[in-house]
Image 1 (cartoon, rainbow, N blue to C red):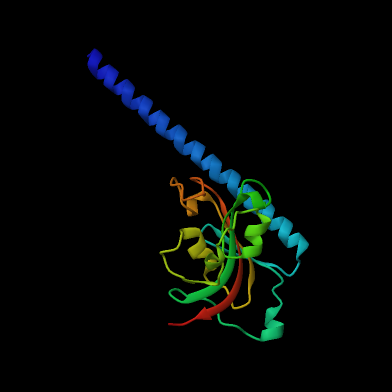
Image 2: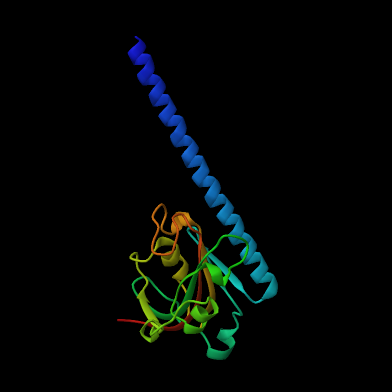
Length: 189
């Protein structure tokens, strides 16, 4: 009898611990969502022509969306197409991005502003071409859908749609990410 009571107590304790961890993780993602909402609101206040697109937990904020007047109607990126872009990726730890939170970029000037050591790194700063498919981290995959040539702005998402519980290079586990982007070209195969 005592043994079964002990086992039942242990199982109950494990269940309670799992519920607390899940609640703590949800609290982290809720806080990150608040940071994203505040970041977006600030940017949209500064640029009244900005447009916001939400797709399954990912936010895409396209700035100064007046290019249709200059270039006419442009094709939108579709599943499986490739896109050439310039980008800077930051972890979002508050209501704004900071160069100290830069984790990846293909723009030399951005790396220099973040005071990265750039000894003989000329080969890493070039226009990147990626395929819009599910090999991308989920938040980036959902956020990049529908971009158009010459768009520039931000793709933001919580750690839930990023790398989750896994740290990647300089990106801590469960980090909210912001990709600042400039789309150069949309390519068909």
